[in-house]
Length: 160
Image (cartoon, rainbow, N blue to C red; front, top):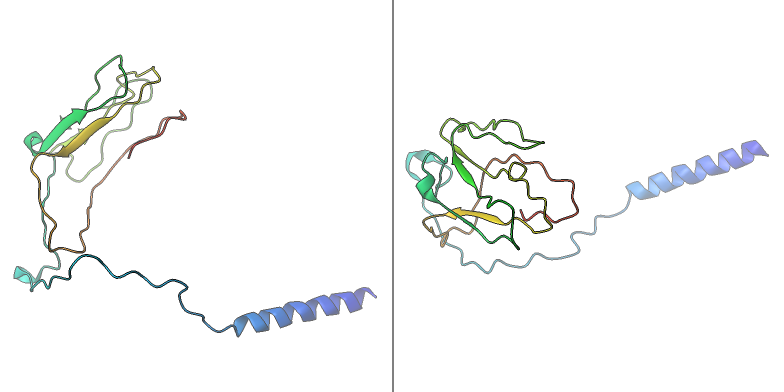
């Protein structure tokens, strides 16, 4: 009796595998929406490069950046972004030293642990470019950057 059930189970498994291999491809379920950005033909770049750099900064000049904050409520310390070389995290749980390829030029750091915000108020520090730039005419813009962070263990949201 056991052999009959084993053989029957094996037959069903093989039949299911064979029929699964013959399922026809149905194609995508959803069609992609066309882009609302007008297509702009970009000519070949000088030197055979594959991309155009619209803006870049390696934090060697702090004047490329604007530092501001809109903290929620009153904080024990007015924590802000810092830009420089050799910045180190402080506090009970500092992050390790920055290992960026351009760390020798400078980097930006927000040391939330070092400023000891032990209130229920959220820290919201902003780091934005000092000068605007346009991406008009570039429908496929890529933003690249390196980051290093450690999330706190609280239930408060992180705004990045």
